[in-house]
Length: 217
Image: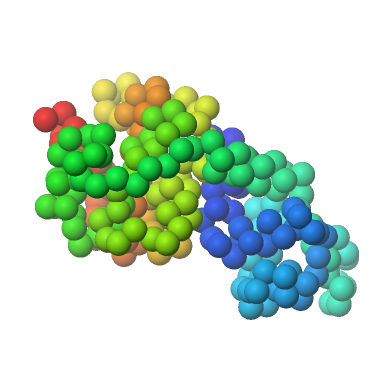
């Protein structure tokens, strides 16, 4: 995964960071007060998002650091690439919300419900440019904004997905706001995304092993 994919994931994992970047892309450069006014976000949220984005070199301060008024911000070149990749990913994936019986992997939803019902939020099966998503609670009003759907937009459909030399699937864990995402590569073209409560007392390695066992049965 390239640095710009990492940056895209960081932006996508917070609605505040995403809103700030989208404003700067469409209307920037901008002052924190302007961003706050146009995005309907409280200025402390905007200031925190700008600080976090500066640390990742997604945005830059256009005036001297010592200047306390008129602190103008804009996206960096890397920030624009990251946002473009994020937008491309959102447009590239055809997402369908499905029930248990229509989920592509037989018995996986039932397995997660029986063993992890208190912590699992959603599971998604990705295959090329399509995704089937099952929510274990009520479907959110905007399922495209759910972390398990945004996971695909942050990693990119052209990334190489292969099994590890040990014969076990490769996986990546993302700690986002209020959720832990497990991105599990099944083969060169398909993967699973599972979202868990961020305070879930679950060993991720054991969790992945259990999922792999379920998929083999």
